[in-house]
Every structure is written in structure tokens, then in C-alpha cells.
Image 1 (tube, rainbow, N blue to C red):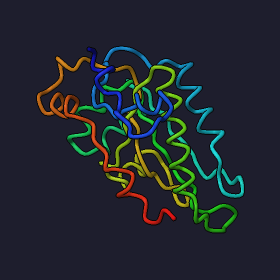
Image 2 (cartoon, one colour; image 1 turned 60 degrees about the vertical axis):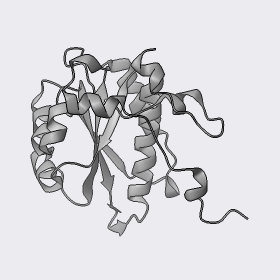
Image 3 (cartoon, rainbow, N blue to C red; image 1 turned 90 degrees about the vertical axis):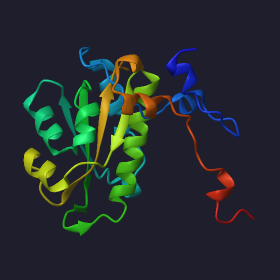
Length: 193
């Protein structure tokens, strides 16, 4: 059985196949360029995310491996994330617009999270692998990219082709091969009348 087949979640209730099959890998092929068509589709899926009042309070920085922008994003990552995310074909910074026309957007981060989720599912459907991370220096990332308030970097997502688990460092290999787990739904639902 391949790693991809092993990573399919065993769900307690039926879900879409693409949701059961999606996982956040730390294995990236460090040679293959980003599939530009798949990336465009993932960004399009994010664009069509629902948002409160159709405010669309999201922005994206797309940094392809080998570019100065990619190096600036990698520079802001914590060391552990640099090691596995740096080889990804692209790093996408998800940025919330926290004010529009001088008015606060209280749902900006929520709406941005939905955009990231739509991006992730579409990317996986098109054969790309993703992993979101918050292990980065937000101030350094914003400074490196020239992002200023009311724009706020919220997460960085590694995107690309799946790498080889056998060639991965032991710590990464162990995480990739460990069982996927989630707490039961009953522990997440507060009220179910």
C-alpha cells in the first residue's frame, strides 16, 4: 500500500473522498515546479469562498521556489518549518484584510480560513499537497513582503508535489508514517438537541 493510500482517514460517517484523502504532509519534491494550472484552480476556488457581506477580506502572496519572494517567506519560518517547507514548489501566504474603508472586518480571519480551506481541497483534488503553518515570525514576514496594516499575514501554506518518505529525515518520516487521529465528533459538539 502506498503512503497516499495509507493516509486516507477512517471516518465515523461518510465524507467526500477528497476530504478523507487530504492530509497535511511535510514531504515535498524539491525539483518539480508548481503545476501552474492546479495552482490557478486552487486560487480560483479560494476566490469563490463565501464571505460575510461578500467582503472577500483575503489576499494571497504566491512565492514560487527559486524566487526572491520564496526566500523572503522561508526566512520568516521557524527552523523546523524551514527544513521541510523550503523545498515545496510554492509557499502561499494567506493575508487577512482586517479593515475595509476604515471599518473593522470582524470576520476577516474566519473568511480567510474558509478561503484557505477551499484552496486546500481544490489543490488536493488536482494532485497538489498542502500544509498550513503558523510557525513563522509574523512581523518579519510582513516586513519582508512589504505587508502593512490593515493587511495581516495569518498562515503560510506549503504547496507542491509529494516527496519521497524514504528519503526524508527521521523526524519527518516518523510524523508522516504515524497514524492520523482526530477526537470523536461527540467531543467537539457542545450541544446536540
